[in-house]
Length: 154
Image 1 (tube, rainbow, N blue to C red):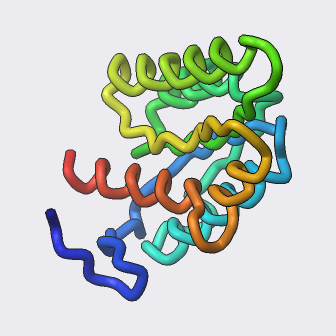
Image 2 (cartoon, rainbow, N blue to C red; image 1 turned 180 degrees about the horizontal axis):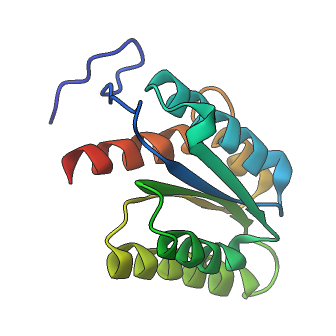
């Protein structure tokens, strides 16, 4: 495992020249908004200027893959970050939305050869979602860090 070299235990990336797109689902915004804050914080800490970050909101997780595809086809981003939250309910809807959204993002990443930080969280309840979008365990932070490291590696 690579040694991390900053105060949070994360590898520091020189992001000054990077252009990053973020696709954020509006559904469950109380969760996704916290993840977006975490992503933006990590990008800033790695030198990505706010002028080089585009945030696109979509209605829900199911719409994320199409937004990724459109952004990837623009050929102006070094990487994308996707942020969404699917909470299990009483029906099978959860399985279809979460599985197809994540599969769709993966297809875009592989087809376009563009790093995408996966931040679509799938939880059994609201409590679990809140735990993954706060200051201690923020999946938006992890998604941003992952895309920065993938850009650096490839």
